[in-house]
Image (cartoon, rainbow, N blue to C red; front, side):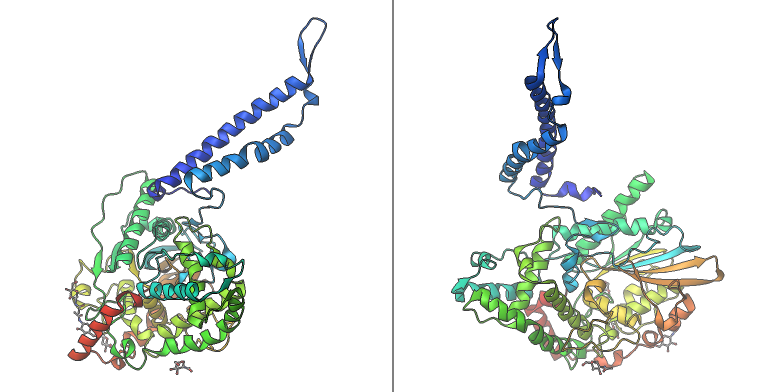
Length: 555
Ligand SMILES: *[C@@H]1O[C@H](CO)[C@@H](O)[C@H](O)[C@H]1NC(C)=O
Ligand SMILES: *[C@@H]1O[C@H](CO)[C@@H](O)[C@H](O)[C@H]1NC(C)=O
Ligand SMILES: *[C@@H]1O[C@H](CO)[C@@H](O)[C@H](O)[C@H]1NC(C)=O
Ligand SMILES: *[C@@H]1O[C@H](CO)[C@@H](O)[C@H](O)[C@H]1NC(C)=O
């Protein structure tokens, strides 16, 4: 809808130039058409009468519509577009703006929502209360957002794997089909770990959205910000803040001053961090550290078998493994989010069918489910600390937790205030999955099948933890029951069914019932099984391991 954000000014210069070219060309085209159309009428159909006055037979003119169409297609547009593309080096009509604050990513919906955690953010449900001044007679009195960072390049580990696959294909292939021919000369060129410029735009838009949705509060309350201290998370939080401030400036018409710096929470052992896991020994390197990869390996062998079969016919002579197939599929999402506008799709996307991406999405969902979610006996435990912090914010009482909270930070009102109306935390998909689990959002969910795609499951990583994913926890004061305060939870604009506290039809539970339903987390859950603290020798081993695979873990 032509929403132009301030961030666009920072796009590479070529893009802006391309826009000016387009406008100038269109204007020029329009002028030329009208002039030529008039000329065509005058020259062909004018005559003089007895008094030598020139008369025109306008009705004999070729219709302006037909004339314009012909001019446009053959006379102007085609060469102009070619010329412009030549000058700017970019496909003009191939690019669209695919991300907007209210709906998120809205291009290529058929496959872009099947890329698990590598899907660009999209609003799962555009609820009727998308701007929340009043909702069914309720007023929002509190909102807490927990957000994942925006789209990033593959992690260092994933990049290495992708390069191995590409090298293998290029060194072993004896011939390529027409469809795969581009791989012969393909050079893998993406960065690693960092937020992409599309990812920055996602986060900026997320800040705009947060302001819009909670305008009645945001109008005169500043959010309290906490960032898990990794580069792309910090960058994400900053872009979000900028989007929030710019939207506020626009809506209120007044300049908004600088906010105090966000609280940074260190990542990695031995730091306690409720937004990034890392201190539970049995989970990180003990008996539950391999649950996810076991589940994924089993399903990968099954779903990639037919893919490998046809790939081997397209690229002759290469000994492809399930991991190679998955790496090739991942180039579709990663090259998409590497485009500043999230468009066009790279050639890799055309290789695979929608059903194949469905399986890919399921494979990635299994990783979250058995890694950090209800399928891992210690998955939900990684979300206990954040759950207790949330209870503390909802009820205005001090944090009571001995799992992943940092008591130094949480005990200090300057780093963990309890009197704010808006909170904004920035984290990762893995720990967010754990937090959703500890919050009982997957109450009663059965283990996912690792042998076939479970069509009925509501556990879908693309809807839960895509890039720039967000959970809103709201407190409401409602007219139909003034004595109670209510809680609602939304993930990516979809209202969660709070089964554990028996939510009403509007998706609400009273604050009391919600807190009661979190008894497991309040009691410390099964954190005792983690084996904290690590032995010193183990700590050393862990640090070494962390050095080696530093960036592969956190997504
Ligand atoms: C707690 O946070 C403080 C302030 O950032 C930091 O100095 C300390 O090392 C942290 N402790 C743990 C165990 O995370
Ligand atoms: C779900 O799977 C995990 C990991 O394999 C296992 O430990 C757990 O017992 C399973 N739960 C149920 C209810 O089958
Ligand atoms: C970090 O967490 C552990 C429990 O997992 C706790 O014993 C320790 O006191 C915490 N440290 C801080 C500074 O909160
Ligand atoms: C804090 O939580 C523990 C359980 O983990 C509980 O026994 C204790 O009563 C709680 N303290 C307060 C002040 O609520």
